[in-house]
Image (cartoon, rainbow, N blue to C red):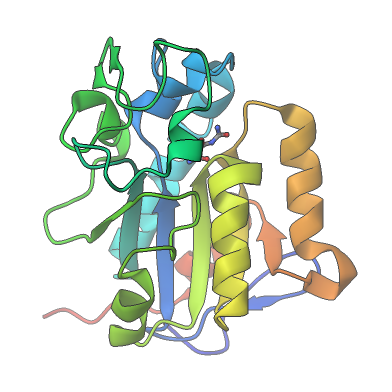
Length: 231
Ligand code: TIU
C-alpha cells in the first residue's frame, strides 16, 4: 500500500500508511445481534445492528485482500464471572443478566454460542480475537501489545455499538496515540440518535477523537493501493 493513499473522511483525509493500518471489528457477537440475546434482553431492537453486517463483510474482504491486520473483539466473561464487576452483573432485567441462561447459552459467557461472532464475519484462522471484559477493547486485554507488535499506528474501527464499545475503544485508542477512522456504515447502535451524534462526537472539533467515513470511501482507498506482492 502506498503511503500517499488517503481516505476521504470527515474532518479531512485519513492516511493509510503502508503496513501500519489494522481493521478492528468490535463485538459482532450473536448475543448483541440475534433476537433473544443480551442486546434484546436490555430492551433493544437488534435489527438496527444486523444492517451493518453486509457492508462490514465487504470491508472485511477488502482488508483481507489488502493484507491488513484484522483484529476481532468479543465482550464477555469467564464462566465463574470472576472478571465481571458486581456493578456490571447487576445491570439489566433480573433473569436476563450476564451469566444467566439464554437461548444461545449463558449470556456473554466465553465459550457459549451467543458469545461468539456471527457466521458472516467469522474470524479466519490466524486472525487475532481479543476477549475483553469491559466496553473498551484496551481495558484488561493485550490489544495494545498486539498492535504495537505489528507496528500498527492507524485503526479502521467497526462493530457495535457506536456509542458504547466502539466509542469507549476509540477514546482509549486516541489516548494511547492511535489514529482512528470510524467507518460510519460499519458501526451500529440500537439508538439512531446515539449513532448519529456518536459519530459527530468523533470528528467534531477538528477530529477530537478521530475521523469518520463511509465504507465506500475506505474501499476506494484500499482499491487504489498497489496489490500485495505475491509470495
Ligand atoms: N448495550 C450496548 O449498547 N452495548 C454493549 O453492551 N456492548 C457493546 O457495545 N459491545
